[in-house]
Image (cartoon, rainbow, N blue to C red; front, side, top):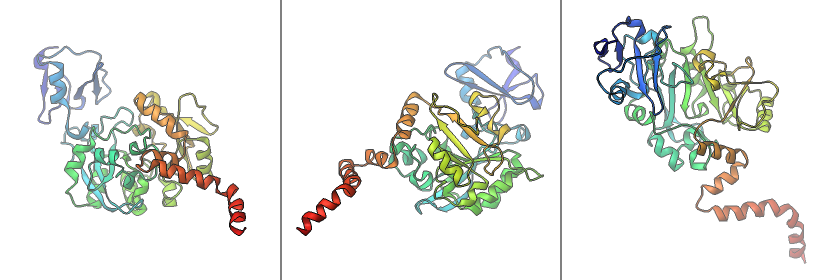
Length: 358
């Protein structure tokens, strides 16, 4: 292969001129290896290093906001993010956004090519919201929130800042968002960050319908940690996110299918199937079993992320929400005293009444 074989197209993608338009390649340099994603069935094992350095190629080859062209949209420029919802959160009434993006496909190895929906605060960038606790408007009472010292694996500082900057001043247009999803031909991932329970069900239903096949088959994934308090109709389109066998039993009793994250040494429970995407057997865009409803069984996956995330997850599943809240509060000691007093009150109350009456 010669250097002239490689050029960059108008969008900055690395193109191999010996292939046809359907076999364009996107090149990404990682810290450990050079990885290639062929967009057709042709397998590429080696490439001769072009004149420019690999690092330079990596920078110029990456598209904005993590887009990767999908086979159905290769010849078109990836669509800009579209604000599908702007309004109050169902969790606390604070203003939030639901932004449809990666309509040209995602770089996420696990999910594969999917249109994604970011659910984020309207007035605070995602990274700042995760640090300050403003993520409660989109994450609810999830114990894995970073502000609660949880073990959330989502990197809010990676792609979301650019999506947020593009979308923060847009007005919402649900019809435009649904049209963009249908035109992309991609399955839909609701909640690349944020809980689907923060959105009105009628809005979610419109997005789900936009991603369906012509025969009506669901082509989306969605999860909620607010399954105890959210609109119960979400059971038809979302999985209940749980972390313990006890939570799973509660969710099952309430009519939910469950998606359980567990520590590696914990066993797989009866009725659960290991997420096939955890070993990169298939991508989420190929599987699509996490679409709610009552068909498909429950799913379990080992918690993933950095060692710090895994340690935080272990701690989060071993304590209740009150303990996590105390650690994230400046009045931790006062709350701890009040909590202990409340737990001891039933045993001491008769004696106190006796003293008072005496």
